[in-house]
Image (cartoon, rainbow, N blue to C red):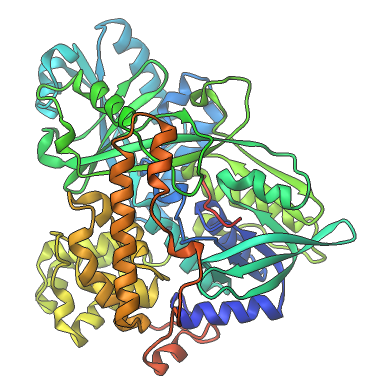
Length: 601
């Protein structure tokens, strides 16, 4: 096994490999699909390169509803195969692949018509429970109105005549995608974020190289591979155009979510509300609720989709119609917007476009994988590598990712059972240990070693109640965080879980990152200023009446990855640490233990 550590030394080693080697497979796009594809290929023994234009999961894969689900509404559309496939993948993730990141969650579906709804929806939920065959999650239950209100006191009595409760699962999507990347690296993949593909080169009529620009230094190089895979989600058409043509077309659908404190709505489970065209989820998320989503066409900036005032009003109005105590704009802690890459269909309504995926040989040497659901990323990855294998001059083993635990998963349940003794041994509160286990799994011991060396890292990050300073340090030293935004937005969720949107945390996190990445005072100030401008631009966009004005407001903030920063961007202070992350070495922590794709074009 190779090291799974993502630090500046690893990134430089990966860049050198990409300049020098010819890979079996090179993947463009570091979202869940691209990361999953890299892991599938690497675990089959192929040489793999993965490049991402921004940060891991920077696009759609960090802005989902954070559900691992079959999609109960697709039963109504008679998409039984899609639902069955997704539910089987859900079971794999809970039971084997990443039990530290994916966990069961219960949802309540209010009924409005006593006989028809209970029979119609009840039949659908019963099918949902039985469709995948054996399902380890708790089955559905029928409730009277009185019993349903005990489960969810925050509902208005007029909003239901009864309810049905069923099981699904949730995930921290950004951390899951990151786990896929790190696991792929542990199997030999060369990965590089902040690496933009600007052109594709051909030998004859076959794509054989990609021109890559490092967004941190401006350096350019040619990445060569026997087969390229375009896993860029909503950027699919742009990457295909670099080759001059393509068979798959995608359309971007914007979905926004709001985050509010848990005490604003009284309920012991999640909530699913049927709307005219789709469904609205109210999802328990630690000490918060995530409410979403919308489903509207988007033809503006793909990197920074913006939520408008009308988007937010829609969510509040829809939810307030069933709540006993209405929510106000002042209750909102965070807002985020993401884009779904949907395969073009016949309908003008994006809620009716296909959530199934497609894998196609766009041109010789370039495969495109697009569409799909977050939950079925592993199937998409397997299909893409199966197709790529047909063009390689060697026999390629079958996919083994269905039985391959992600980093932090091995031994997780046994470690979870020891959480009280870990708390006692380290002096941390039991809730802090549980917090670290649910985010890092058995890699918790990496972080505990850091705390032992620097006890001050056990303190909480200012402006938060749960995140520890050690997590910011670990993000920079092991998880590939290059900018302050990477930590506040994706390695943690401080940007959407606090009313200050991370502003009160920025200075401390930047200082902790600076010690790892050797930032000087000027660089620290630039990172903080850039983050503050981003937050202000997002707040401004959320006050605009429509998409066009919201997009203009959001683009008012500069982006450090769009230009060349002055001076050295990343350099390890400790040369011994740099050597420890050499991809040819073995990662040995104290205790042995990622639909959508993101932008690279």
